[in-house]
Image (cartoon, rainbow, N blue to C red):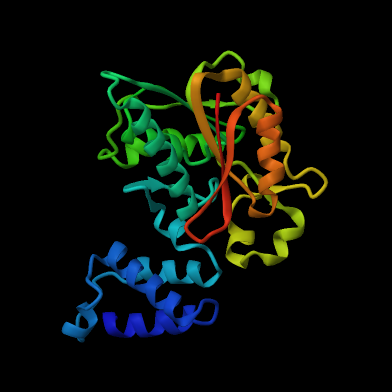
Length: 292
């Protein structure tokens, strides 16, 4: 099969479920990752034959069902690193990179003039572990723990460095299975200098606003909360932060943009200081920052 023909057919097939520009970008990335060819290869060498087209044809068939490209490839880019992903974990979004960057910048500001300063980090609802691994790679970390209720997600998190030996960290994170909604299960882990979380926060009634490829392929356990109590995770996280942050410690959580003030109030009510709702690059209220 000629590369030129494969690209034409794949773009047309995926354009049935994606906008044309997105279909084009997906096919370009697929060819780069699985065939090792440049975006111009089919133009510069129109008769170039794909040596073994079975893999890319199977990948297009999976993509045609709406399965995200990241799951098909088994990896994604996040905060300058490559991370393994599977249907057991959410695909990390750009907003979550902003969450990591917020904490890295705050940690670097606090470390100025403090020779040898190391940080202890707790990541609640860790999923793929991309947050805690990124923090451990960006900062001098003496202790890093990721907590999740899903053993399947933890298996992905624990394997990140095996999948990407270039992921160099000052201290490899430890991953523990525990229920964030049962704060006593994490009571003996602290104290920590940084607490972070990107918990489930999409209300059930918001399902209708989401794309089918997310609803049908990404884990509902990591996405949705009941309409009757959409802040249940933040209530527990605020309690954990108030009891496990070291004096002078800080943290941040990613939030539902519709519930910014309500989420912030939980952290203030828990006794945390300087609680602030922050916007993402799109101008949406996306994070709550706090200190102890």
